[in-house]
Image 1 (cartoon, rainbow, N blue to C red):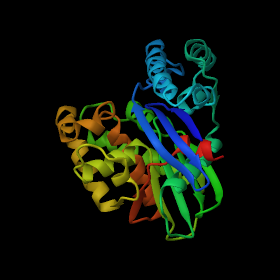
Image 2 (image 1 turned 180 degrees about the vertical axis):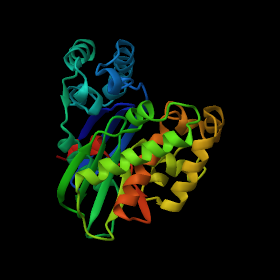
Image 3 (image 1 turned 90 degrees about the horizontal axis):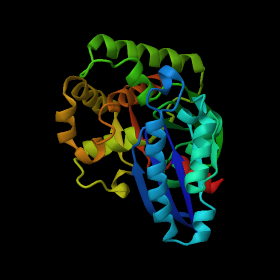
Image 4 (image 1 turned 45 degrees about the vertical axis):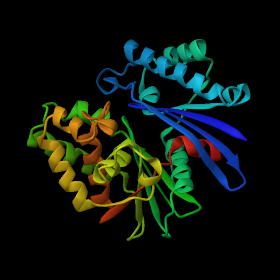
Length: 303
């Protein structure tokens, strides 16, 4: 049975088409676009008209892709929205536009549901040998942390820190000043400690979303991007710190040349995502993390 899901995030809109079998999900197609729906939501609390219409264009494109698998798949496509839509005062305007333009009924996920579906999606796509796992999903507007084991979610939380939100809030200069990076790091640390999230020592960290997958592609110098070679890739915190140093001193033009495929549409917010990931690893006292290509779009189909 073919099924499809769409995840409307603060920075990205992701399409997943799978064959659902007794053994789980077999991925048929994955498509990513970066219309940045949540641009400036942190500062003014509203979705911009231009951003909303960019998302509508992406959704129209996705309708054409899904229709190749049959009208029933399109009719039953699950569409979710997360932090940007959740926080926006004009969210209903956006939901109405989507319904009228492409026919999708968008489900706005709570932060807790976002963590749950991310967890389910991540462990469905990634082999993790540990009794304690923490899934880290760094989005544009929020970061979800989900703690559990290889079968059960124990606790999931959502924190209002994301790569778009913190880039707009802290990293004003391009490249940013060291004082700005320091302030960003201090805010990340304070928010993480305020969660009072507890988990066993030697918990395995699994990172999903564009920050982690793009980092894995850059580290492997992967051209073109190949999802199977991203999944289960391991990176140390030392390697992450070195890449943060690189991205904190160079211009966007240089960084786009470094890996145009994964940096296009992401280059200006990538450093903020890396700083959040670094903060989570330090909070968890973890020396490394595993990259997963799973996420909300997988978990919502498994629920």
